[in-house]
Image 1 (cartoon, helix red, strand yellow):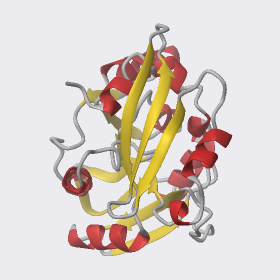
Image 2 (image 1 turned 45 degrees about the vertical axis):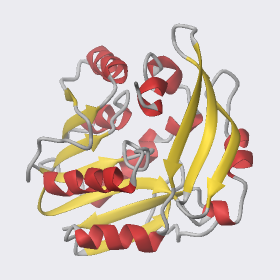
Image 3 (image 1 turned 135 degrees about the vertical axis):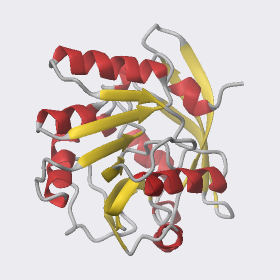
Image 4 (image 1 turned 180 degrees about the horizontal axis):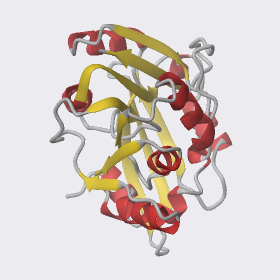
Length: 253
């Protein structure tokens, strides 16, 4: 039986590119470039690349990128988009819990809940972080976003998601948040690119900053910095607060 995140992204590539949370690509890539000091020799791994928006933008700017995703249909769309722009990008289908890369990249990115935090167990999520760490060269850098566990303690997640939903895109209802596990459980209604309507039971893990720091230190990252993630406006100047739905994490080996 397919997991909810496999069902959701099956035949959802065109609709996915219209979701409001994927519209910040240019600003996010500006930030990534700044973090790697515009060094074109940097090799980048994009885990959970989806339809390839960051991989494509960074390749257009002259970087070498490998994009991986679990979804065949998302990758198909990524390859189409790269081809339309006459770009050759190495897109590969992999499960982020089982990646083949060992000390190959200077930078690993996982943005917009690219794999991490979607898994059924904390152990699976940790395995994704471990695989990202293993893919890095010595002194490599990991940049990712994840759901901010401080947000649901002060705000309604459902109200936030409803306010950011556009007609025709995926919509949540019957949402609950478990304080013991820091998991959000919800029902998502979605219509895919083929017009098929689906009702999915989803579960996502929220993390608090101290957890993320501890997990990354366990994986031998020497520095871990956490900020508020603003759509399309990533910055080390955005101090994390309870108002931020997502955290921006920057860890260095």
